[in-house]
Image 1 (cartoon, rainbow, N blue to C red):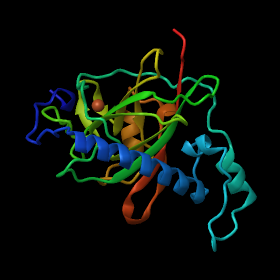
Image 2: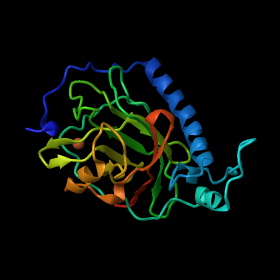
Image 3: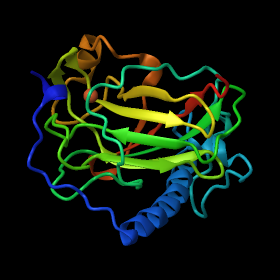
Length: 251
Ligand code: FE
């Protein structure tokens, strides 16, 4: 029996209240804007939510060193390839009725923080607002919260098709499919469109929990490199990540 079939652990459920919902919605809106700005200013990211901000000029902050032409070109290059995001198995541990929130880190959860931003597009690279995204994952020990909703949540993309997930990098575990590299499970569905179920992975040079991500990625037979999150480091060992989904919108 592996972690995908693990018994529920002792962590408590997160009660969803109206106040929580309002707060998480406000936090989502606030952090989405801030996250996109920081991504654009960093000038080092790959495909990112910045592509949803193309209407906004990529202005440099006052006093900042001039960005190179290459960096500016990179920052405003449309991220969407039009290539449909590959699907994957759902696994047995999805739980419906998760809280609506962008930050899925609950008290008691330790781990390497990551803010994951991105845009959901259709295959014509049109952003898809109001797209439902469910995220669920294991914690820093490789355990899923099956009794509550720790590291689980859902959200809707904003009017530019953008989302922001605040979470931790999950740990690898041994499950029914053998050695699993760290991954985040997702279900993505635009209004009236087919459901995409897939899993997101981390680059080989990711630093978390002293684990060898290159070896873990190589050993995972479910892994699809097309579903790798692009990472940039933040002070204190945290990460910012970007991943854009591309959905088929006709059955
Ligand atoms: Fe899993």
